[in-house]
Length: 395
Image 1: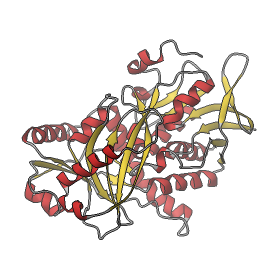
Image 2: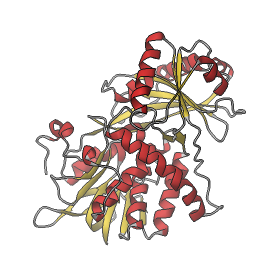
Image 3: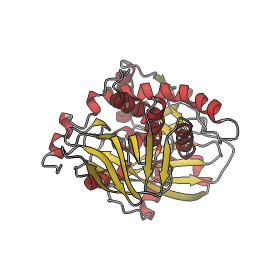
Image 4: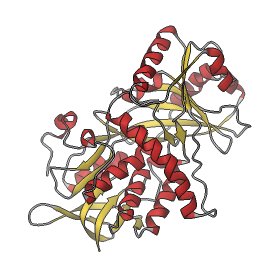
């Protein structure tokens, strides 16, 4: 089977890439070893955030991505019709809270830096924060409102992007795992071998999230992406009392940390179904998916520092997943110079949902040779920040 582009991975990033590429008129085949939206995209909160990113290329990408979600959500609704489930796009905004004097200074300083780079920030007094979130602990020392933050239902959003891609001509093949590379006489990657045969294409996009390292090895290259474990608690449904995504200022530091040990920070938000999601944790445990009681206890304990009323709300379940962690905390988007024909769209860690549409736009433009609204140089696999992690890679 021959396509213009093969996309490996049917999470939200792969789905967005397939949709963008098919929309550009290219023949696209998407390969997924398991079920669609069954990996990392099924294990997150659906965050579309600008609030957690400091000045730099990822923030620029996130601002653009937030705009794309605002535009794309109604387009998907119109295209797929009322019979398709809602992606639950909710531009509810975020509130970041500090609970100490040192944390307050760091939060206000960080928000001021973001504001100079295009983020809408609204510093709040304690009374203003309580007016927006009446159940917050009133002992907070500072808060900042981020109107651009939003949320989607990640599984439905992934399936909606896949449905849109199919309508544009993309072929989605679930239950088909990549087992090796198909190369021409020059060493260029011209396809992949799978558990069901060979597929040939002019370009192969690796969008396998935390499994990109494993698939990359099958294709003959070292991909510096590792799984970073995260856990969420889910409460029983209740009338909505939490109106925004609310998290403490420690969350930003946790997302940028390279520490392999367990780190937790408080993130609390409601869903359209009435449940409350409580996170977040980060630790590097390989692909060990076992839930640990001490992690769940720590998440619950910290959530009460923001919303004490949650002490009376039952937790009905917990689940975890793996974020695709890149060593320099930036996603890999673009061609792999070591293996012509291979392109990357991975390494977003916990920002894949929010950055999916912007990633797909960059990638599709690169493959099609079209101009882009965002400079993608900082995300190329050949960037200096990854050089030490790519040294000696087999090709």
